Amino acid sequence: MRSLSRCIQQRPSRWRVFRVAGLLLLMLAAAWPAIALGCSPNNPYCFDLNYVGGNGQSGAIGTTLPQPLTVSVDSAGADGQSFDVFWQVLSGSATIVESGGQTYDATSSGAVGSISIPFSVHIKLGSTPGSVLVRAYCQYCAQTGGTYVQDFNLTAVQPTLQIVSGNNQNGLLGTAATSPLVVQSSANGAPVSGLTVNWAVTGGQATLSAASSVTDANGNTSINFTYGQSAGTVTIQASAAGGAQASFTATASAPVLSALSGSSQSGTVGTALQPFVVQIGGANGATGPANVAVNWTVLQGGGTLASAQTFTDATGRTSNTLTLGANPGTNIVQASIAGAGSVTFTAVATPAVVTGSTTFAIVSGNNQALVPGQPSQPLVVKLASSSGTPISGTAIQWSVTGATAKLANATTATGADGTAQNTLTVVLPGTYTVSAQVNGVTSIPTLTFN
Image 1 (cartoon, rainbow, N blue to C red):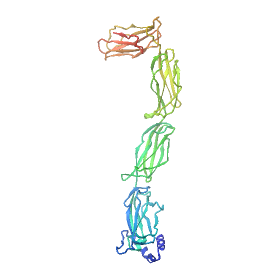
Image 2 (cartoon, one colour):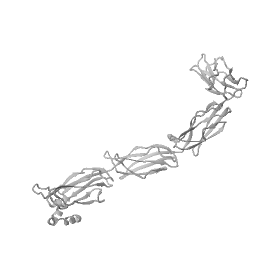
Image 3 (cartoon, rainbow, N blue to C red):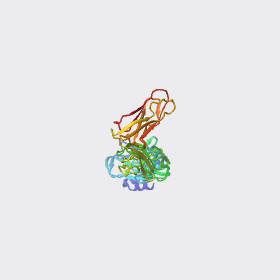
Image 4 (cartoon, one colour):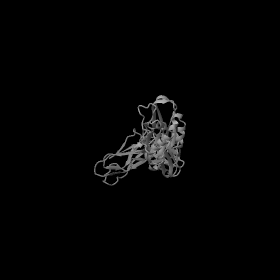
């Protein structure tokens, strides 16, 4: 009432006689908000406080309502006087943005003639849900007999937080999560924009990209995180004013190096093999980061690697190629990563077989009488040079006709004596044919066992 009294004292002298009447009208307005005298058409010097917009809004606690509260002072006969519109939060939890408090006094400049001057304020809802009543009051309007009060009924509601995406991720220690954590805030089924969401690690180890974030026009907001150095469950909580919460869970695991493909190959001495492929992985399908160094070493054999060190791609994979040396035999290659262990690959280097200077023949096992369910006698072949020198370490591929027959091995290698062998087991009586071929050398005739 004191601030309104000062406003009255600043009015032109011809209106000071209305000071007591104005105060009485303000008291009546507080008791009966519906009072609105309204200007008479025959009184051009009357002023009305009219409603423009913003009533009936609702929003989440802690946010600013999207629409301002707006009234206008209208008159047909202004003669240059200035006047105030006094705003006040009468009940509920809210503040007026323009003042940062619960009251605000807006003053117009002088105007002449027919006027319609708008006055607006923005409302920030407080931390308590419920009804909010904001009143606009024009004492000058009351003194001239016009409408002088407009009430705005607003609602502050409790927002909710829902997880949109990013929950239940898996990752390796010390790596960045593959997806951001995204939540959406809503109130009464509508998105809440401008809401501050606080983030905290409530379990396990992780580093957050931000301690808080603000919802966008769709009510969404997000952060990223990096796993710590302890394996196990990580819990990250999003919270907002009024107790709204959403909790994310992720799993951090120690990195493990595994061999994907390329082991157990064979090839002719001096030739390049298919790539050896490794991957960094962890529990529940977690894959490693990019640019991790993998060290490669030839542990056995005379082969040469394409590189002593390679780096993982975005999926945690990398590869290397081995060129076999000049000597037949087994090659062993190791791939290792600090803190993730090592894996080994094996490959067999077979002698170079030159067409016309080798012999490939059946030694024994042809024309057997097979007993269903029992392995055959060994099927033996021999590979030697034209001078009779055994050729060892050469892969022999085996195949059989008939769906009910099974070979013990699809591939065997010649030994020091140049021989390789296999056995056949059949289920049903019948005629079966077994073929043996030098791997990768089509110019040497295939041998056939009947």
